[in-house]
Image 1 (cartoon, helix red, strand yellow):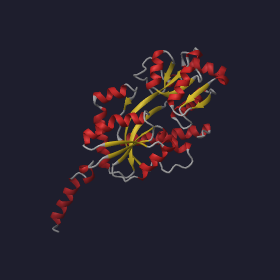
Image 2 (cartoon, rainbow, N blue to C red):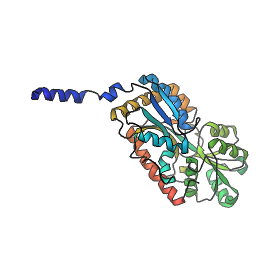
Image 3 (cartoon, helix red, strand yellow):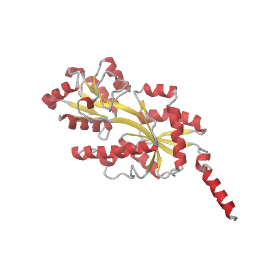
Image 4 (cartoon, rainbow, N blue to C red):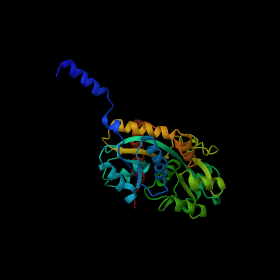
Length: 320
């Protein structure tokens, strides 16, 4: 080939968008959800998937893959072809599971490509009204004096609500025993009835409604800043500087998925999350829209993995 022609062909090839991005998607996309219907990641997936279909022109089919706490579904994603036709709406325990389970069939950093941290949910420290405490210092003083009579509820041995409360116990220097439930719903029901006395759990849904109705007392939220959904509540960090824990939902793909496909999905999600309709529906769940870059989400996964690894080792937390 003529050298000048060869250079021209190379330049044109470099300038053209990758074929994967041009054609993507050309068939339905499978959206794995590692939780049961009604969980935060399921709600997020079912909210954005129809919008992704409208934006990108192919169905985005939600599939709940909940076996073994979502580990089986996550492993299936890791082994799926890296072509963008299988993605997952994962959530915060994605970063803690490597330290809770001895042999995960995947590496959360190496086997996945972050697409976007979509939304963040503040967690809220709530107590039963019978404790007659209204502030974090009052609760900590009560727990130090009456720890043997207190139990905190968690949504399960591997749940973020358990890890968050263990982190709080460490910060506050208190001892409160855990009662583990099969999901947040039963735990919240027992908190309302007084069977357990305190929780640190994702704000929104039943928790938010029970706080606003007075059936539960909100003491503080767990984010770096006050939650716009609970503006009258301080943060736990106001009393224990540096304390921060939030629930989140983000989109991931198998490692090796073409960068152009990742960027196309990220751009579509950013557009969807900026729409007033979608923002309103997430707002009703007390969710705070983030719409991060892939790099920002990857950094969060790495930092959360380190943070939860430390607390899990120090507290010798095991999945029973």
